[in-house]
Image (tube, rainbow, N blue to C red):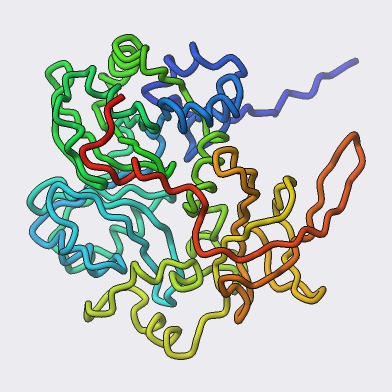
Amino acid sequence: MTSTAPDRTVEPVLLPTPFYACQLAANELHAWGDWNGYIKAGAYSDVELEYFAIRSSCGVFDLSPMNKYRITGPDALAYLNRLLTRDVSKVRQGRVGYSVWCDEQGQVMDDGTLFHLGVNDYRLCAYSRALDWLSWSALGFDVTIVDETEQVAALALQGPTSCSALKTLGLGDIDTMKPFDLRHYQFEGEPMLVSRTGFTGDLGYEVWVAPDKAEALWHALFTQAKHYMLKPIGTDALDIARIETGFLQAGEDFVPAEHAVRQGCTRSPFELGLDWLVDFSKPVFNGRRALLREREKGSRYRFAILDVEGNKPAHHSYILHNGKPVGTVTSAGWCPTAKTNIAFAQLEMPHGAVGEQLVAEIYYQRELRWNKVMAPCTVVKAAPFNPARRRQTPAPAL
């Protein structure tokens, strides 16, 4: 008598985004991954070519898996001012503001962008799922919070020809948008929101439409704007661009406070170099007391950008001072446009002052052998890539 054990293996199920059919047709590598439970493309053909599309023409990235929360109601401003560390009243209607939000211990729960869409009408875009926490925090406020992640498809166009590409859709005045502006347009008779925002540090826009218009938008752009050299890009190329321009990534450069398992692994805005986002002129916001204490007594860590000697990225390396570990690298990479080896590090205080000389203990594998490099590195003031076109208004039309 023979018996066969049932196959209990279960393939992970990921949700397709509204652009998935278009991505599938374009993806030569079938290099897929997971982003918030949705299928995301790590790369389509060649990571370097995708990166150079961002810097020399226009990279197109599917933003749809980003968590998106609509916050409306008479107390929307008061609620968001209680939630976020920055003064939300300064984010005028028709503008987008970058911010962080903390727990009561002043530890960063997440960062994201706040879209001021209309009177008492906001959209908060975040890395982590936060509907429960947002709802609990709304106790006592007359607000309505809706998770609209599945109701809004989003596409990022990043690079020097992004403005010209969007003009082919009939958006003739889009070049007059300032960085962090947003405008309402129409696409095939339906509302379309465009914001001059992005995660590459370059000229770029993000386009927000209803899911049933996603494929039509993709095809319109790649057909009507094909002479502007549009290229689909994945998260691998995007990661190079955001490191080159100094942008933090939640889950990589800090552990969101709600996700942390061990005490001491989270960071405050001060420890991430985001103190400019903390407005103590507001009488009340989450984490204010803890952050006031930290401002008075000092921080445990300092975020630093390192210029690392050589061309071996310092992924997950220890940072040493006089032979002793004083920090770790959170993100690293060779920056092709800046021709620089950059690393983001969390350093124990008082280390991390601009100009300080440190050493990165780098390990890398070649032909099955692990190699070790002790690479000198210098703390620099800012990331190396910061082109004028990023801020230029009117935006350059090529």
